[in-house]
Length: 184
Image 1 (cartoon, rainbow, N blue to C red):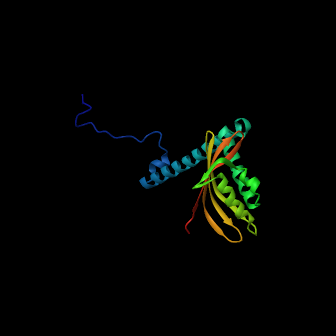
Image 2 (cartoon, rainbow, N blue to C red):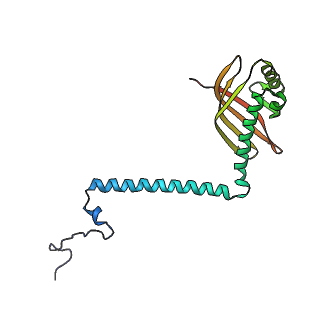
Image 3 (cartoon, one colour):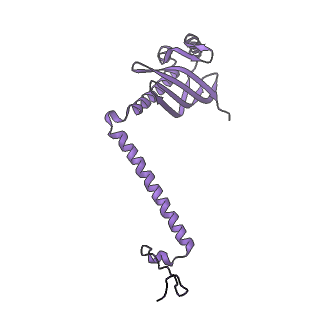
């Protein structure tokens, strides 16, 4: 009787029964390419499926999304309405978006109002364009960051604006404002 571990034993692995015959006959690099192509397709499928599932959860919750989605959309609307009141030179409507506790650099609410009243009295139209608006909400505070393009009869600039909001009742009010010029 021969031993399995003896010199007469020869191990010959058989092809896996799960291997496709065509793939088994392919060269090694073709198998690798096919594998990575399959993995890429799987990643694309899973990404699309996850995005659809995320969208579905937002739509299926009451009131069109969870509370933070509503707060983000409300804050975005406030930013655009704020910019529109600025473009219309309506000092009352414009300052209504600011909290009495507002600070920007060394300026408080009253000083900010005086500064903007002078700007609004200049002749000519004001143009404000907002792009790349990002809003982050946490509890009763929100931060909006965007690229602001400003133009009036005497001045034009482009920069990043960061507005910080605080929720006062059912309204969002600006508590701080920071503008940084973009270098071009």
